[in-house]
Image (tube, rainbow, N blue to C red):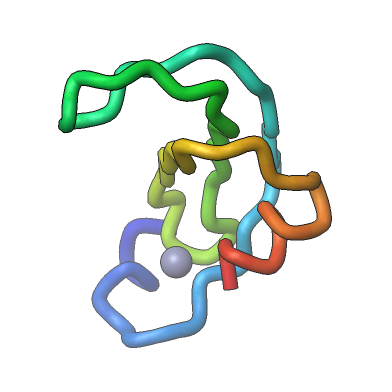
Length: 65
Ligand SMILES: [Zn+2]
């Protein structure tokens, strides 16, 4: 599936994992955070995102695009 990574496309995220834990922001403060990981079905790219706030699963999925 590597071939497709060279073609611009809208990532299609699958294997979406949403979890929540305390995380230290770049500012040094600790926030109860939402951690999201997902893998694109087309190019196999893995995405990790941390939001330094507690957001709902629905919001997290929306932020993936
Ligand atoms: Zn992709």
